Image (tube, rainbow, N blue to C red; front, side, top):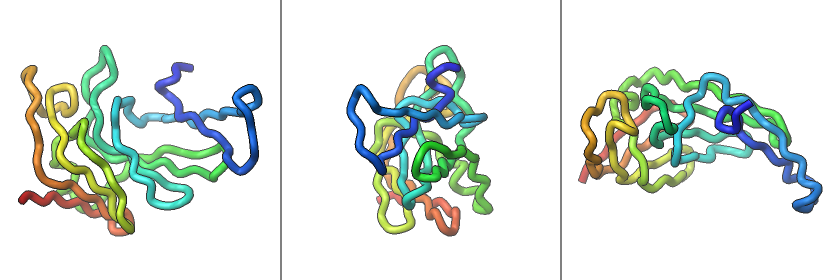
Length: 147
């Protein structure tokens, strides 16, 4: 098993030391391997991963949003979000922006795009991005706002 194909999980309900820390793994299944993706924490058991750039030696995967559900201890599952609103999937995947969560919304501010972040982009240059991408976890609707 390659470390990129799993998510490391730690049960934080009990005390541990570096020598006794039990680390479990959650299979990523078909979730893409991306560097520097933002993680939006929705609730005690759910977070979403968006953005990032391709793993070394690979092509950037399609732009997708993935959800990690965890039981809060040592088990969980990754699943792709297939939102009814297709607008969100038209935003190029970004990297090196800022992520935040407010109430039931995940936000991604700024960042840059390139052929390393999005399969629809060609060339070797990065393009700085403005605006704010948001995703409502309850409604599964994404929006983009420019100034």
